[in-house]
Length: 273
Ligand code: NDP
View 1 (cartoon, rainbow, N blue to C red):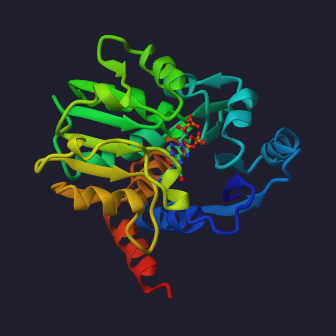
View 2 (spheres, rainbow, N blue to C red; view 1 turned 30 degrees about the horizontal axis):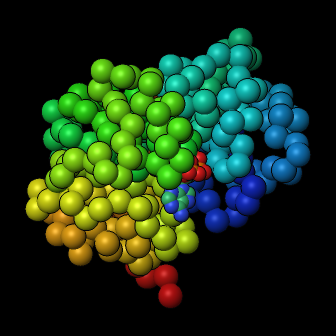
View 3 (cartoon, protein in one colour; view 1 turned 180 degrees about the vertical axis):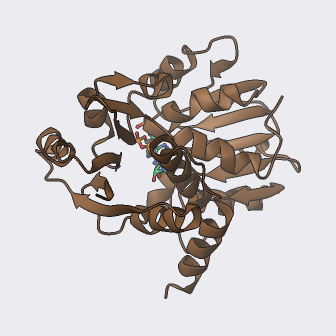
């Protein structure tokens, strides 16, 4: 009996997760099935329970808009998932119970570490939504010196910073520092070609900028960061492949190599007309 995995979301047809996980399975010589599962908007819990009732069902990824509902469904949660308040990875334990984890932040940190030494870095995190929450603990565990958090709705930045007050602080535009080592855009502003309302002085010649969004074209934020003279700009495709690799590891006990799969996806993206 081959183990079954799915990615649950709505919409889901566009998801790259099946391709990524099938590539990981081939690379690590694991036999498994991985499909998309379109979940009706009002029926996440029922659909998940039905999927996991089958003996072959071993795990699932969860994407927009169900990460909070997946959190609520779990029998047990990792510390990362608890802090994020959201689950992107469901694992069926041997006793049939569901464990929830959140690998988005691990994916971000692995991708960042491929480009920069995070130890001692001064980080600016733009946004305080689900993705920002999921990244906080992995960034702290990577040994960053400080995390300033800026968000359109200041109160949410304050709430997030309160999780680790020794290292994190909420900032308004005027209190932002100059020339951070790393600036991470976790806002969804780029989806509409918009920019978070921050001054160009946050960027210096040594600054690495990371936009969690990705696409064929450079994102609005990364375009702006380049114009401010950032040393390097990176989009979120590596985070996507990275979070999948960490989910795969939780299910299968082996961490696949990200680079060949990332290269394959990047090539496809560039060839899209
Ligand atoms: P949420 O909806 O939870 O949070 C959105 C955040 O963006 C909030 O902080 C919100 O501020 C802010 N925001 C939205 N619009 C604007 C705007 N016009 N100007 C300034 N701030 C704005 O979304 P997520 O955290 O789940 O996702 C955020 C982004 O990260 C998305 O683009 C998503 O695609 C990407 N992502 C990428 C992943 C990857 O693997 N590469 C994984 C997960 C997410 P406010 O609080 O004021 O509303």
